[in-house]
Amino acid sequence: MPKLQIDAEVNGRKISREADPHARLLDFLRDELNLTGTKEGCGAGECGTCSVFVDGKLVKSCLMPVAKVSGSRIETIEGLAKPGDLTPVQRAFHKTGASQCGYCIPGMVMAATSALRENPQADIEEIKERLGGNICRCTGYTKIFEAVEIAKAVIAGDMPETALEEDSVEDSYIGANVRRIDAPSKVSGRLKYAADMKMPDMLQMQVLRSPHAHARIVSIDTSAAEAMDGVACVITADDVPGKDGFGVFVHDQPIMARGKVRHVGEAVAAVAAEDLVTARRALAMIRVEYEELPGLYDPADALKPGAPVIHDYAPDNLVKHIPVRKGDTQKGFAEADLILEDDFGTQQVEHAYLEPEAGIAYVDPDDVVVVISPSQNITHHRHMLAEIIAKPINKVRFIMSPVGGGFGGKEDMIYQGMLALCAMKTHRPVQLNFTREESLIASAKRHPSRVHYKMGLKWSGQITAIEFDMLSDGGAYGMSSEGVMRKAAILSCGPYEVENLSVDTRGVYTNNTPSGAFRTFGGMQAQFATESMMDMAAEALDMDPFEIRRINMMKIGSSTHTQQTLETASLDRVLEAAEIASRWEKGAPRVRGAERGDLNGPDTRKPCTLGARIKNAAKDDAKTTERVA
Image (cartoon, rainbow, N blue to C red; front, side):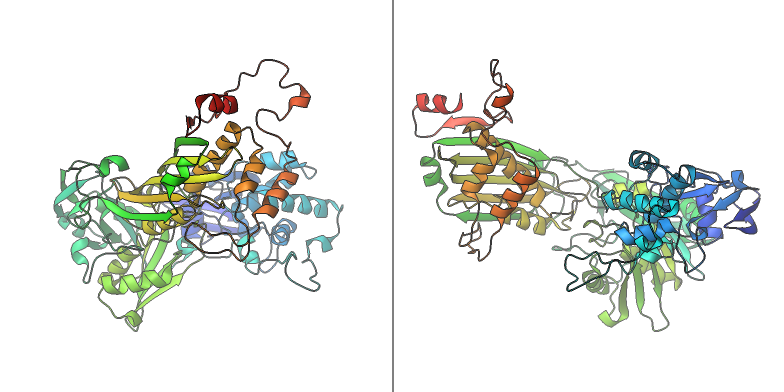
């Protein structure tokens, strides 16, 4: 199709450019005008990172066809202030620390600017409403709203310009409001993330991904794709010159599927071409013949005798088992007045960082393979890649680009090897930018888990024994599973001193999307179960939930689950602060609120409403009934 002629005013400057008919305004701004402060986070108008003004109105540029803006006046984040200067809104974002990873901030600044332009007297509720189309995954929004309120007051003259200046620091920086040194580049849109970087003669990469969860690769025919005009190279696992395998603890993952695919979305082949459209068309020309294999989608099924084997080195599908033993649990349960037993589950969770995965690779004049990406573990990636591409370590370099949100999800080397192979094969720079859909299907998630929990207690609330058994879905590859299982085992029973415990955490292979690092690294799954059990125990024993935690909390001199003696401990202060801040009403769950008349009528609540099965342990049924009925 013929190109479109676009004549418009962009940031006060008349421009005249040709554009592809299918292009969005976002593509035009980033690719044709190099205005990369406008980001792509979702491509669906949901996240707001691409927000710009068109004829004075805030729009999502990922939803607007470029054909609609000819003759329009467009304003991007780069046009809000003169180069080197910042608007009051941008300065307020700098002042309050509203920018963390910074990827959402240009769009957020545009939305805040729009709010104050349309209503300079907007109150906090209106500000929240007007910023509702913009997502931030780092700050929690409080500092963003605070920044807009400060900017509003300064613009209106209710606060002096000095309110936007940095706070003075007296004796110590600890506890002082110190501004981030990288904030100006973020609030102005000048900071370059991996997808924003451009290099001369750069190719665009696209990846062919498996539609099957478990299948043997019978054949791959790339000849038609390689013959296409504009295609620089096509790579498969056969192009790996060295030892093909990477991972955090076990190197079980190939650069691209080798022999078989193990999850939907696994990379099978990749194309580097002159432009994105050509690369995508080439993918459609690759022919892959699969032989489907039985899949495993439940971790319990993966451990059953005769289950399909996902990795030959692990015939039992076990990634890692971490056992922890302390004391004698049989003795502890025998001493218990009450035994609670229940099951808990947590789900797979997507990191949803606003910056989709992206990277560039090239070979420098000294034949050093250079990879630029928002990797959270570049030293480890560098050592793994050197083995994969069969080069000495001094011929491999990793550069960490600004990370537009990670939360552990960019710790794994998922795509950097493919970039390096294409750069080596073409001797040209190669860029890969994931779509949001690609990020969802191919990147690691939080481990789904199931915990079977058994807890013995005295009537006093003292824990006598715990059995904790966690089964986690590691997905198709090991990634961070060993570390997550180890941390889950260490933190399994919370900050409570337990004399007798038995802990088992297991991560197993399935044909689901791989599980990897995510904030708390196994601690969240474990603590959800433990703290739920503590609340259930408080309810069963008619005890205040704070009190039962104080009875069991670790103190100075306590022995941890792994037999370490604590020299410091602060849970008592944490509990006290939480109790005060929450205005906690003291008392057992069945008694709290009695002065408000909650117990005037019949008490229809059941003990252990979270579903624990209460069992009498070495005590007569009458006493158990007296305590928990």
